[in-house]
Length: 321
Image 1 (cartoon, rainbow, N blue to C red):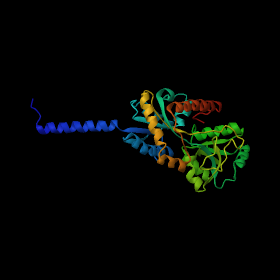
Image 2 (image 1 turned 90 degrees about the vertical axis):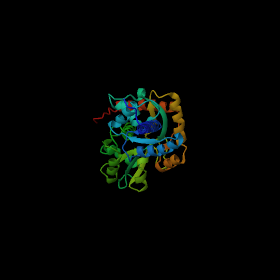
Image 3 (image 1 turned 135 degrees about the vertical axis):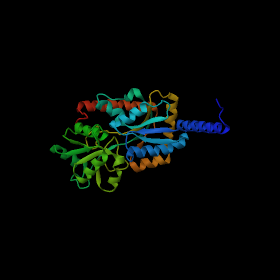
Image 4 (image 1 turned 120 degrees about the vertical axis):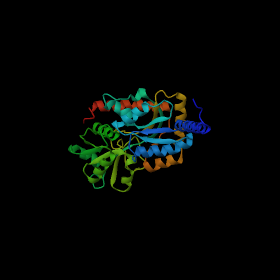
């Protein structure tokens, strides 16, 4: 058998070097996987975080959008990834703490399949109406609930806005006609247009229309007022207690990821939350930066899973509603 020429040997060596370099580059690439399409609030958050995380970890960070299945597509993708801390799930509360109560059979187990890494932000829900709606105050709107015809839109069955609507129904002891949409954008459009009476949604997705005067904030579903709408009372202040809907976003890893890797990532994400870019993001969107340990984040996940599971069962909420 003929020996390869010097040219062939050089070409082979170059190919091997390129292959090894590509493998090394991929090993240094960290993926933040989100269950939402590009352009939305979750995508915006992921990209702001990714830009800062690159500086902290000195490696390339990419954002992978994998919408579908109410979070199941993204969750399953991360669950199948190597548990080396290089593929992470940036999720809202829905896929982790609401879905277990909403779906009798999930193709992933949030508790067994994932390890909490870091909480990023907390996002309060706010009740809004269109600029031309007759209810000028929260008291006006709550009084209108008594007619049994008042409609409240959400971004979908089992969404955090839906959970807030269910809480409002229970606490106010008034009928509320829930109108689920496929996403916040069409729900906001119809609220502005008057096709529905109101909408409960993430403050971060409402800021633009509130500032433009197209929407009017009436009440905040949180223990304290939002600095973005400081004149808007909480439901507690209005005598409608326990309407607390916190649509948090956090990062999780495959459950077999080593603890020292999780702790290192947690420290990096918490440093990201101290950056000017994230402080500016907080000020412009109304979200609350929420740095904490993996253990503290895990406790919130457990509490929210129990809380939303109990509400879903009590109100008989199903995906076929």
